[in-house]
Length: 379
Image 1 (cartoon, rainbow, N blue to C red):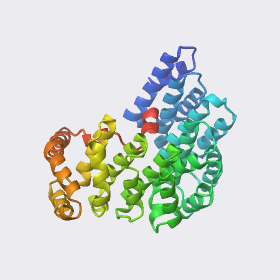
Image 2 (image 1 turned 180 degrees about the horizontal axis):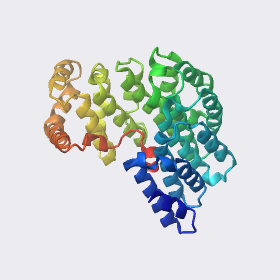
Image 3 (image 1 turned 180 degrees about the vertical axis):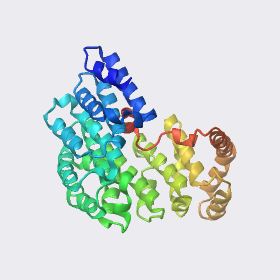
Image 4 (image 1 turned 90 degrees about the vertical axis):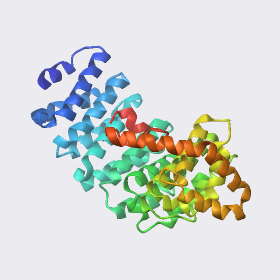
């Protein structure tokens, strides 16, 4: 079956047929990869050639297929070099697809990338962070994140402190790259912590006139705290500040989702700063301007107060805040009675159902921090 598919893949079919052929190849690599080992070279050639197709759907199927091919291809340096060279010489409108393919390959290759190739492509990717096209910057940033997994921690720290943080011409791209690196290899930057990185992240969250920088900073805070599992007297207050009603709705939304993910990963990280995060979350949850913000802040409250487990944290917070902030305590009690208690019950039922049928944690289906790139690749 694979042989005939490879032979017809280069024929002059319309893009729908080409996309279907590439998708079928991807499914075969997922389901019966071992049987396709004799066809690795031909499949690689087919996928790389399809990256130059004029239709984006075909190109994305090819990029996804290359990522699935890597477990059968122990030597990836030549493929990576080919993709980087292709990105340099191809038409600008398909360059992003070559970077998407590079991301898929780097993520699957892991430690299989040699040091000389890492050094070479790192310089190319850093240069792409200055691109004016957002998709190009995002693709390059994700590639740097995937590459950091196979890069020694000392080299990752050098990249961040010497090239990303000082950048004046590629601030947004540098911020996105730092977020991607923290997502994939946070341990390289947080053990031991780099104060310069922490200060830079906080500075980005305060960029009210550049929302992309603020959002990247908030996501970096989330990945940092989820990795360390330790609370922070610097990062948590910055996250709480981003929830304020003077901030853009999209910034507040990302801050709420970030806080939910942090609390879900380790409640102790948030628990020490409930007095800072609960008032703005509660205020946002009761606003009627944005349904997405309301839903996100309600879930952030649910996890920050540990209501997905029981009411122990909530009652302890109420006991402290009744004297220190009686208005917040009263409002929270009322909102818990009307909304949060019912949300906790529905959440518990949904998680029990998901555990029973093996479908995973359904609460992860709401607005998560940054998976759009992977979803577009259909990985």
